[in-house]
Amino acid sequence: MCRGTAIASEDVLTSFKIDAHKAAKGAGFGTAAALLVAAMGELVGNVVVHSQAGASGIAIFSAAHGSFEFVVADRGVGALHSLRLCDEYRLLGDEGAALAAMVKAGVSRYGPNCGHGNGFRPIFERLADMTGRLRFRSGDYALTLDGRFGDRIGRQLAQKPRLSGFFAAVSCRVPLPRMHPHKESRQG
Image (cartoon, rainbow, N blue to C red; front, side):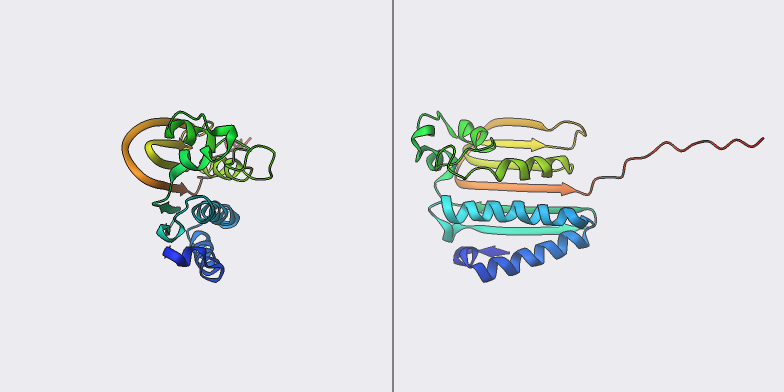
């Protein structure tokens, strides 16, 4: 677990990510372990840079054979307030619109074409492809991306009871190997 002011410490965060990488590899994710840690790092970075309450941040992971889960949360300003700091997004209507926007390529509180907002979407699409389930909460909305359906990613945006800050929970399973039909041998 990494929390409070330690979440912004480069040394503490590096050690935490190394531990997470070892745990994900041990759970069977192989080279995909790096993607899991990159996603977790992206979210922790958002806590530090965007939440305006970095000291409230927490990151935690759990690994078991075939699965890896992590949560990153804070009690900061949330997705809507953060995006509204940019003129491009100041008219977003609610937290649901902000959550839907944040998973689009190039969306950042710094505005379009600024070099920010390009890492979030591809990382989380790949996690969802790993039979992952990703849940984001901000204010009074939740956005769930669910990759457990095989060839498509389910997406659900729903209004929920209000909470302060931002919460992300990611759960991935090692994809099962695809079965190849075997050739029947004929004896003649």
